[in-house]
Image (cartoon, rainbow, N blue to C red; front, side):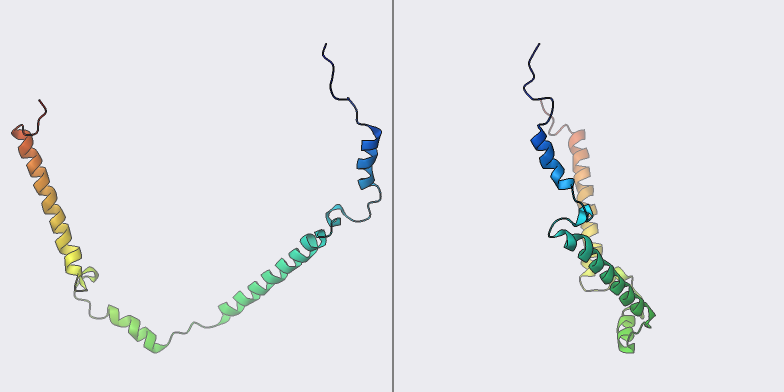
Length: 128
């Protein structure tokens, strides 16, 4: 049978050392250290006060009437007056980006497909 290397019990001195921390407890355990008053009292009070402030600030913002100057409204509306062309063909370069590039892509893809069919039908590029 093997010998135990550790003692199966704690020495009395260790027990007394641990017990002295739990002897005269008058304060709650969460207010023991020097900074525990800050973390468990001051911070929650500050959070509650700031949340109340934000709620009252939001309530005052909601009660005000929305106001937009007439000049700003007219400036925004002028983009939507007299629309004859679709919106994607408004600027000078929009004809290039919306018409020429898709046509070029379609033409090049048709050319590549046609060349591939021609090469397959004439056995060009076949490995020997």
